[in-house]
Length: 213
Image 1: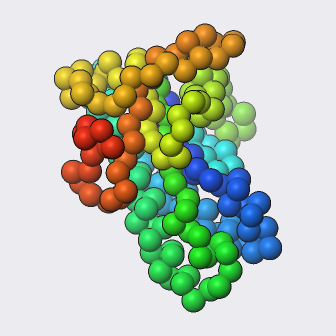
Image 2: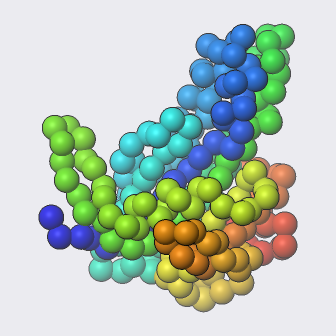
Image 3: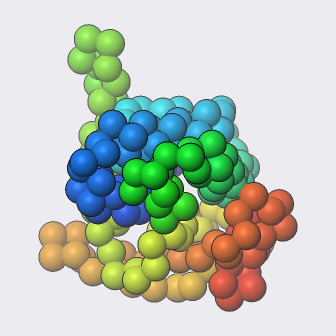
């Protein structure tokens, strides 16, 4: 099928691999915790965002840009900000609810963090039985951007192509960076670092920039 203009979003639990490996003696609790945290994020997604699939500790979502790409981008950026509030709210509740369990997994729930990558481009769709598969260079790029030079474990990274759609609403948003990949070349991005006060509607990043579009 012909490629379609889409926004692509990946949300990923930071520290998942270490959390599972370190807590392998309490693996059932560790897996249950991370599953509930990822579900809390997925439950916050709404139109135009659609869950495409789960990828281990990550969720891959997309949205058709429609007739007003700028409005869609602002909606998606706002939803992503809400993902962090939902994630940390569930982590707080799980930590309190499991305080009586002495296992390392239940005692270290608040160590887990969230990161998100946003991009706009094109993707081709194909259906294999009941599954919808997205393909194309932009799909590869958004996944590749999960491996980046950002030192923080919790952040929102958006490509300049996504950032441009925000217009004036995102003029002061994020730190400009360039990520380089051997097969894709340099990729201009913006990165915002949420503060340590999750769930606040007016939260800002560590540079005082608006986190919610």
